[in-house]
Amino acid sequence: MKMMQTLLMMLLLAGPAIAQEPATYTRKYNGKTGLMSLNGSLKAGAPDAGKTFLLITGITFLECDGKGLPKKGFRETLQTIDDATTRQLQLLGIAVKAAGFTYNCNQRSYYYLSDTADVRTVLETFYRQNFPQYAWQVHMRPDAEWDVYQRYLYPAMTGNAPLPPLE
Image (cartoon, rainbow, N blue to C red; front, side):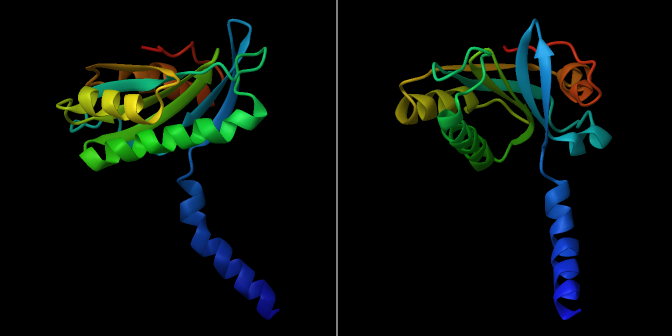
């Protein structure tokens, strides 16, 4: 009984952390499989008036299977690159990650920013110094209404989303 109480307490304490994990969905787009990792907790506050710019950034990789998804041995590397990119943006203190999308040998992460100053320079330097073997992309644009999140990224949860923009 004591073991069961301990286990229950651990699950209750871990519950909020588990709930904050992004949900991952597999979707078909144009006959190819795409993987969407979505921060659904942002939906209630969208649009966030303090974060009015959209950043789409990521890499193109060659280590993909015939479906355009990362090969099994490369998935961890891809996650490491994505985590490192998120940490770079967290250091600037201006970004919230909305989603990640892997499709057709491309990985893109979608962030909402409060400011775009220095973001391009920081990310270009980061990719060039740490991952020079990959082609990388950095695209920013105003999106005060969070149109991309609400029209393309969040609807992936319901299964009726169009292909999200890759740039």
